[in-house]
Length: 300
Image 1 (cartoon, helix red, strand yellow):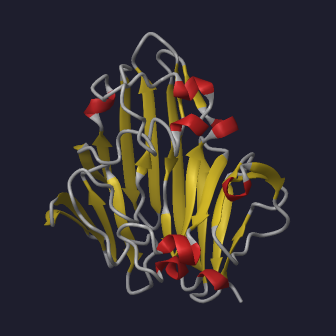
Image 2 (cartoon, rainbow, N blue to C red; image 1 turned 45 degrees about the vertical axis):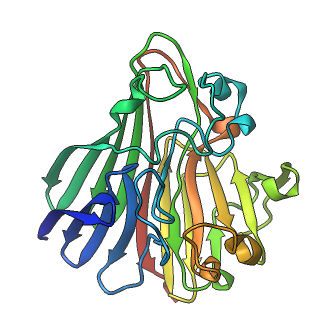
């Protein structure tokens, strides 16, 4: 399988385009953010907003932003995660690394797989309000499927609390025609209902704005899309939590880089370490969080 890796510019952002046969993956150096992923002529697997802006210092709407060293509102994180930040400025949502330029540390082939490894040098004590020394890398492996692995290695002498997420946007045919399998019986926090803790009954279907944090999850979730006769299987490592998000009608109109009707065509399933699943990195310890994304036809 021929693999071609090209450095390209999209507006203000330096990017890498990886072609493997008829498959294509687009990655921005900023945030080491996967922007889009498709296999041949099939509909995209990773969704990129039609109104996305490619500006320096601003995370791109869609793809797979890396949220680190905390997810969401720092004040909603466990105390150990909050204590890792000592900045004078209010802590930005979703951490400190989404809008930074990461460095392509390595690119190589393994058989017919293409592998890129990005490194975030600022995570080693060079972030505002972040005095810790963490070696932070993201490995992207493109073969018959897509594998993302985020590595945090505590090079310092003190423990560090972190939460994190691979904030994956998936392309779907129609939000009304998809379901997520693997959540049944699992506890979740409904952030839209005063952060109440609930339990999932059956598979998850969508009929309104959704913003839930699922805990105590199995390794595998499946996004079943009847409109495209497709199953996207997500197999996680080093993670027992996930965020499921769709803004629906009203919130979609308030989002930047997001068409008013785009809520119908995307769903976020974010592989994470959040709340009860946050990580305490001991000195010298390394934690890997990863997801393998595999698309197959639904067997009728």
